[in-house]
Length: 173
Image (cartoon, rainbow, N blue to C red; front, side):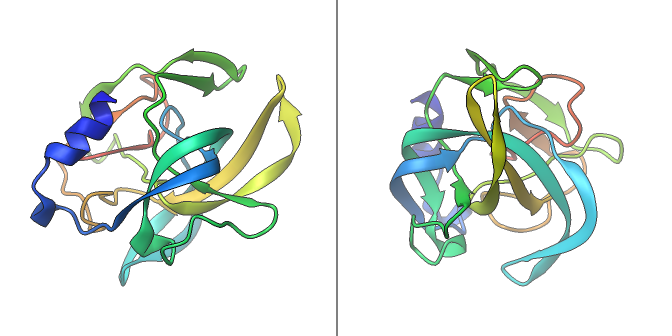
């Protein structure tokens, strides 16, 4: 709830997003990292390196950027949207056991990148791990979920991913 309150308190002119609520299946990448795919992804006309994150699929209420999802929470068959949630615990790698989500911050640098997976499509994986449905999610590296623009080196990033995770999923809020 604290995270949702933080989003609500930010001035609306800072956000280039169209917030909307969804209810149903979604991937929560908050504690995941992202591996570069070697491909490019375009977001709102800007080109970024693409990253892939493995994320647990949850059910319930979530927050989305409608502008990136054609204002629809419905994902195509075999896919799920990677969305934001106010849950305080979720399955996490490597065992996919449920654990508390612990926020931390770091500074974006040439050696410490980040990934945004919010409101991008994911492919549901065929098998479950520790009874958890997983999804392969694809999104931009070093892209701001608040503005959909490039994040400058030196920006403070907030994530729930543990220290040492490559390109932790998060944002420069």
